[in-house]
Structures are given as structure tokens and as C-alpha cells.
Image (cartoon, rainbow, N blue to C red):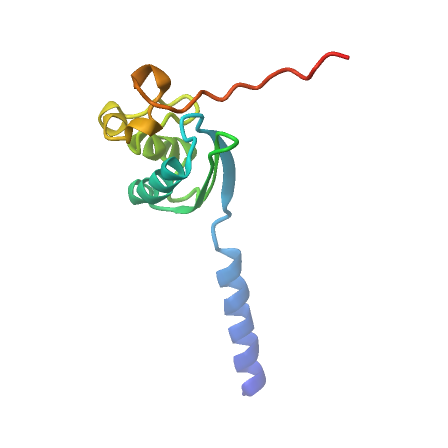
Length: 127
């Protein structure tokens, strides 16, 4: 009896594990997120808009945001929109204008009075 119960329990466990949705991961360009305050805002606000977002990690020094989600509950476009709703550009999705207005002055683009300098990638030096 114990052996039969153990086999059934093992079969149920294997079935449950195999039915877990596969996670997806991506890196999104977020060039406007350039300080700890920007990072904190995105990491706090974006998950409120997205069910199925597992992880969000802003690399403000690199101008990117790494995300992980369950594809049966959300998609990359919804995640980009959530970042835009926090006030930041996310790849091809521009920041929500009302959310952008609410950013601290230092977190805005230089043309809007912000102190962040846009990230530029210089070519390697010629030798």
C-alpha cells in the first residue's frame, strides 16, 4: 500500500512540475533610467501594472532593464508599457507623459531641465 501511494505521489509531483509555465527573460533599453531613484521607481511601479512579472532589475549604469515573466500571464509589450507608465522610455514605447511630468527634476531629460546626461556609446579609440 505504501509503495502504491508513493508511486502515485511521485507521478502527481512530476505532472505538476511539468505543467509549470516556462519563464521568459528579456533585456529592455531604458536609457532615461540613470540613477538609484529611477531604478527604485521602475522596480516599484512596473510590477503593479503587470500580473505575471517575476523579476525586474534596472541597470541604470548600462541603461537597461532585465525582466522575467510568465508568458501565459503577460508579454513583453505589457512590461514595456508598465515601465512607460512609471515615466520612462522602454525600447520603442515612449514614457507616459503624465507619469514623466511627475518624475523628480533630476530624473528628467536635459531638455526638460533634468540633470541626467544621455548615455552615448563611443567608438573604440583608433590605434
